Image 1 (cartoon, rainbow, N blue to C red):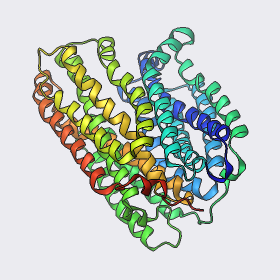
Image 2 (image 1 turned 30 degrees about the vertical axis):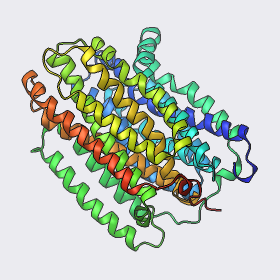
Image 3 (image 1 turned 90 degrees about the vertical axis):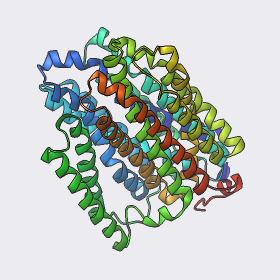
Image 4 (image 1 turned 90 degrees about the horizontal axis):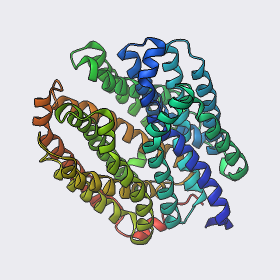
Length: 467
């Protein structure tokens, strides 16, 4: 461990980062089971209910890059703590919502708070494990496993809270988690990890990337309801393209860019970003299609469909933990390659599903997909964080998180096109092309890791440390 930092110090930082990972992932799914109760309480429309889920995703995705840049400029601990305070405040405010649209505003604010927490938690882990790539890989495995467990537990926790205290419980649960996270952060994160950077704030770049991401993610969300021909959808896509071009132009010219484009010239940065984008395109798109397949094509109830997904979510947790340990032993590059190939094989195994398929025929795919992806994610993150200096850790982790969120939104939109109108026959006809497309994307991800990631573990271990 660098600079004499002991194991207890790293453990405290890991606990704080894991609380952040827990609450960010929990809030993605904990409200889902409360939607029928919210519809009844607020007399809400379907559009209003959909934005209870989508609002959080939007606020989260569009502010990630800005949060990462602020962490590098103002200090990671400061932004991290701010994220917990904002999430606690907006969760409490959500309890007193009078309309569904007030609640949706607070859900967007919760997403913004999550954007403050996620990249800074990775930045803190990167700095606490400075110069020790194997320790970082193990820590990231634990961090990812906590997030995966929270994501899977969300519907269960939400159901219990709904029964005990009503819909407000799914917002009140954030308060004790934020309180403990703040206590651990204040006591466990040393002051030297909160040093402010020397870069100036790139306000023009900040506004342009927020505009680009808001337009792109918003268009992808609304596509599901409005279709490509609606002005909001194609207009949003057009604004996103123009704002992105303007952002690149500004970042090339400004003295202190929020996102130094030179980062993309290093394969230790670009490879994980591309890898993360591809795995999220496939996974989110396939989850969307599988939900339709189980309920509309096979006639499963929502509860039965949820139980069918249990092997998928449970395997992720164990794979995250194992992936971090394996990456520490054989190097993250090989774990990324192997994980991509295993997950791709899982998608291919689902391409034969039809109208008469049983849950048992899905089990191999439902185990292979999370086994491969779950192992690859800590390795992917370790390569990226070890390949940048401390001053750029915040923006680097934010780029990876943003790429994955954009991939998720685009995956749902693209695979939604493949299932047409969502009728049973359309879904069944789409299963093979959807799964084979996903297998091809994972093969491309594995090739990306093979060609661009470091060739030797010692390259990662001796990556730039900023010292």
